[in-house]
Image (cartoon, rainbow, N blue to C red):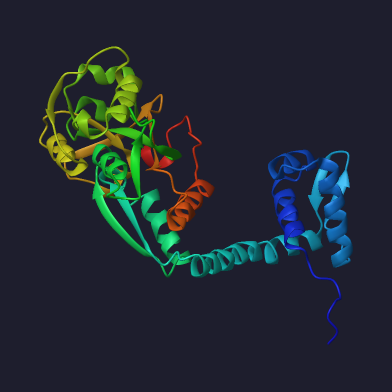
Length: 313
């Protein structure tokens, strides 16, 4: 068997992957932070190396050829594998066999943070990941004091100028109602109608910035008739099931718990709550630096403005 004398350049493969996704030289070049002529030249070099035409170019845009589709399906996944191997080598060579102390926040358990931690552990097999669970205010205090390296938090934060923050995404908020509540007759509930009903909620002290942001989205300058405060979603939903009041929580949290006697309804317009991670300077901790970069690469701050099908019931 005779092997080709050409070796595929991984940088050009990365250029190809972005162009195959965008199917537009201008947008791909912008994402890659290179000039468009430079991108075109690198793609032509890659095509010569592979002795194949990867893209059909026309006035209407760019499309993949059969060879291009084969490279996308079989070659692009190699990039993820190369990154994984590179990170594993970096872990072994730079002493990243230490401990990373991570703080969960109660209201996000079972969601994006869990997936991020699972995937990070899979790539950093030699690292010890210690996880505790608290709430945003406590997580910020522990990161600030050095008791933890990084914490998942509800955003925005107040008075955290000394810390670094990365927004990872947002969650849709919906209303939980007693099963006999009049608003259960609606498929979606206008936010402005919530003010008429007693509210059960969690203490502002757990996440002041997040609490204020949600209050602004729900009530504006008005003040709801809060009848009780509960420390976590489980107790909040118990109070709703008992008919004490309504509450507004993450859609995923309510759906997962599914308490008896509680009906969930989507809200219009859709209120959303941001979440992310908080940490101090990571330059002296390669493992923390790796985790921060890992999270930043997977951040999804896009915010849908319509209720998802899952929350419409």
